[in-house]
Image 1 (cartoon, rainbow, N blue to C red):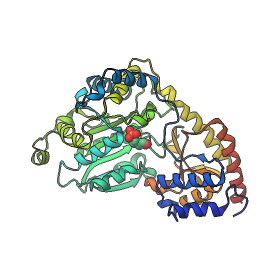
Image 2: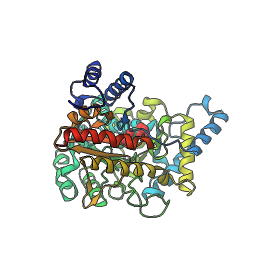
Image 3: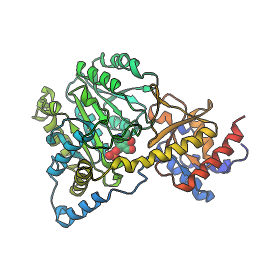
Image 4: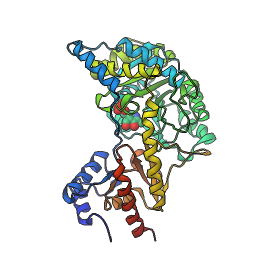
Length: 437
Ligand SMILES: Cc1ncc(COP(=O)(O)O)c(C=O)c1O
């Protein structure tokens, strides 16, 4: 290996230290550890493209609301399981304002991040019908959601959406649903890691098939309204965030404050259960819990056992941020558009230096520039590409770890600072000079 920024022996030693021989099998934490070790040994700053953490300051209105709630003495009181009324009300309004979904405040339940929301949803969805014991992942996806199924002991199936867009999606989905064992379908939209956005017609396909096969759709809107090709940031005005809620009654929306309000540290999200599903009784739940209806079991059994509610002050914060957005006082979409601007610059640098965008289109349209994007280099295998880039001070996530069958890396634009563009350009140029022939 010639002309590298980092000595190959340093990369080798760091990988050995973290017991990683193939980066396809390295967890994000292991990759983080390897990179940190190399940085410490060499004093060379990496261009960190691996972590999906917010790169913007938290919304001030949330912080002020938390301060006020703490001063008012909420810390000494257990939060009530259904959540504070303000949060329930503003969540329901927000879903109407930005998704055009009608969900009653009753069905809007606070969770300790969407991480907990997904865990709770997988748990309950897999308990309502003994024949339905499997979660179907429309991949690529957020890999820890698979670990959640493994922790719960729920089976899983998955397919890579890459080859099944548009009219190919229905038959592919149906090939799983027809087996009768799918308890729930999960996807994120926009998608982590690729930033593909399912179209209305694809969501219609998912919704109609979920209704036909009586399967629950878990729609993860962690990056809600971040399809910047359209202005989704005006409350109660179209266009709205595309959603399966238009096409089925059998759904749960996960709405996280982490990215849309840069509030990841306070671990606050809302799980919004459709009115029909909330009230729906299930025999299996009655037998197991003495309670039959989906919503009450979610609250009083699942979420209660997981954390006995969600901390008070983040609930006040989220209620205040949602209210400000609903009232048109906080343009959260305008704020997060910064990620799109960073991505646009980074994509140009990658492409100029011989890389290509792996997931590059939503049917006939180029993808939106957003929080994540995917890159490949010639026909280099994903794990090997990351290993090579580590020698040039660049870190990312291998696509295979997200359930993707394509070769390449996930790149996150969030922590990029102005001085990183020139660094990235120079390092990729060196890399391309060495491997571009
Ligand atoms: C698709 C997706 N869902 C959920 C989450 C987690 O959200 P939270 O921070 O609310 O637990 C993330 C965070 O990276 C994500 O990318």
